Image (tube, rainbow, N blue to C red; front, side, top):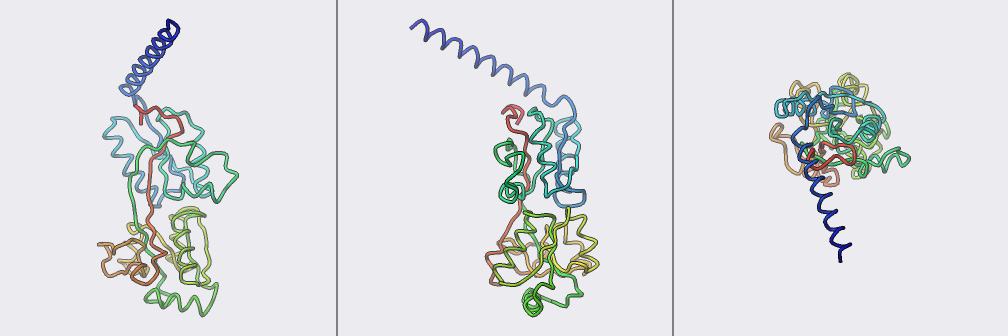
Length: 267
């Protein structure tokens, strides 16, 4: 009985010390700059949203939050850097939904996209819009699919990398519509935009906010959106479901993650 009481007392003391330590951590955090890693090059939706978030966090936390672009390998390079960083809350990852597909596409990763990260917050969700270059001559999705069927492999769709939402949306369209369209992966949406606007690659799924200015200037034509309902920014553009392709109903998301083991009080 004495041994049990001593163990209980020791456990209570340990828990009390942990609680006190955690409280001190929470009060002290953050006492210097925080690095928010974006695993893609500047210019894409992930980068743009991360910079808005970083400014808001800087104002809220009274410490500088710096965006650090570590693009390459479909997000692997930046994600790996955060997974191996100290779990103190000073190195964070701003990740799009493609983070969840890394393990399926790259089984030999040096990190686990789920187990090696601490989930902190969901920041945003977004629909995607399917756009085509005007030179293709398709005024709607049916006309584009007719061209793709008549000339298999001549219509290409760009993405910001293997396993990204843009890539998966294109594959979903290819399968649902039974068309032979070619996937052309780029290192981020900033890299693809020049080729898309020049017509070197004809189509792309991308964030509505990113593509909206080009559609409004008629540099690209909007064919459909992947959201369950039409977007208020382009109310005349139908959804994929309306066009008979519910399999291409896809929404992307953006989250903040830390390395595994970030203390609850810091989270």
